[in-house]
Length: 274
Ligand SMILES: Nc1ncnc2c1ncn2[C@@H]1O[C@H](COP(=O)(O)OP(=O)(O)OP(=O)(O)O)[C@@H](O)[C@H]1O
Ligand SMILES: [Mg+2]
Image (cartoon, rainbow, N blue to C red; front, top):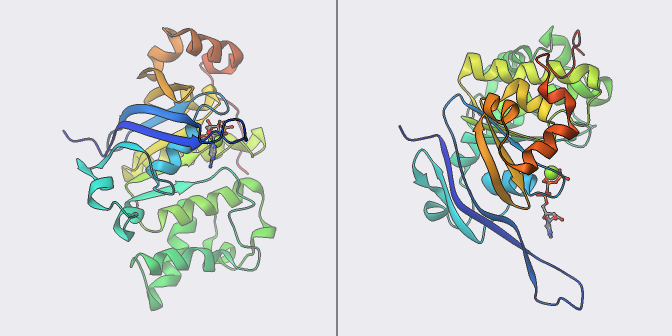
């Protein structure tokens, strides 16, 4: 069966910078191959600087790779849309960022934040907007939605803001969500609720998720498969239990040793919501 997303030989280089190294380039994503199936959660883990966010940006087409194929449903979008992603692609692949404070505009209500993508992607207009906004808010656990719709971002906690960012990403009804460290800026006590929401979206709506994290405990809790990235290369990949219980690569063992919570059977942090 054709995977929803297949990345082959994905390569990104940046100028190394500095006068001595004028013209030099550094390969930060080096011939990366992986797939994300339908309704599958794949975690991309690795230390800071290993290239995780760069891979996320390449798949979201916020940046362009030097080489490689980026296939959605078996079709290489870099060939079909070489000059930039179409609206159709952006509708199918949505991204959630790390910083729930920076991602919302303080002068707009939550309703405004959600109406725009609904209209832009043709999911609702006119009198359909209000109920569509309420449905999105309810879907991410912000109830009663009528009350949340009228609020401004400053009235929300970090976890609630991240839920709004998730609702906004859901507005176009995407097939793939890319979440780049979605809980790392949140208080540990509310991370679990956001991770559980992401899992619920997969379970109930069949959304695929590429979860980017340096936190193996989150990956263990959520992911079906884990990819371990080091220096821009995938050094190990496999089902979550295999990676956590029987890591083969020394770098994976190092990551596990640095994250004792990852080997527990309990989830990373428990909470009663946010
Ligand atoms: N626009 C850019 N120009 C030059 N170098 C860049 C650029 N973006 C990223 N890099 C470099 O590429 C490497 C990978 O960065 P990236 O942000 O993908 O890492 P990461 O795994 O997401 O790290 P973190 O866990 O800290 O978020 C880093 O060395 C970074 O400095
Ligand atoms: Mg990053």
